[in-house]
Each structure stands twice: as C-alpha cells, then as structure tokens.
Length: 159
Image (cartoon, rainbow, N blue to C red):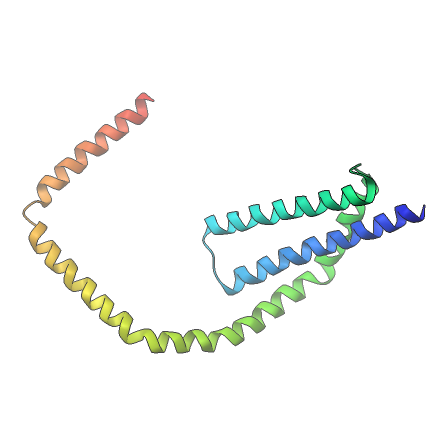
C-alpha cells in the first residue's frame, strides 16, 4: 500500500512538472513571438518529451504496467497547478522578462537603424534598376505565367 501511495505522489508531481514545462514554453512564446509552424514543432517536441518522461516513470515505478490511479494523480497535479499557479506564473514572469528585454531590443534597433536604412535604400535602388530593364519583357512574362497557372490548375483537376 505504501508503494502505491508513493507512486501516486510521483504521478502527482509528474503532472505538476509537465504543466510547468509547458508554462515555460508559453512564457517563451509570449516574450518571443513565433510562427504557427514553430509553435507546432515546439508542441510536438514537448509531447514527445512528456511521453518519454511518463513512460520512464511507469517503467521504473510499476514495471511498465499502466495504473489508472497514477493517470488520475497526474491529471490531478496538472489541474491543480493549472488553476493555482499557472496563470500568475505565465503572466508575471513573461511581463518581467519583457520589461528586462525591451530596453535591450530598443538599443539594438537604435544601433542598427543606419544599417537597416542603408540596406532599404540599396534594395529600393536595385528594384528600380531591375524594373527598368524588365519592362520590355513584362508582357511576355505575364503571358507565360498565365499559361503556366492554367496548366497547373488543369493538372490538379485531372489528379
């Protein structure tokens, strides 16, 4: 009986730990905005990590046997942490990190501003030069693009 209680306690702490790790991901996402692809990639890595952690806990504690009270304990730990700690941790830690990083980002933008403006001017000048030389061929390119688009659509409909 004592071994099962200890296993339940480990499962409870595993649920808290898993939710804490996900909160770290949430904090990073608030501080550094991500594209949907990278969010999905992070989530995939997180769930693979969690699956391995839970498997190892089950393997060491119950020789790989799935115990439903352990699953219930993990969900209880997740739920309690999510309701009691998570909202405040994510909100205030991301706010604190944002306050610390904001002056650094502003300084880096200020220092690199002349470089960014020069690069923008070069890009605009190159675009204007390119458009002057391509003006003669633009009608031909438009016609070829239209034909290729039509062929791609026909291929998709056939498939």
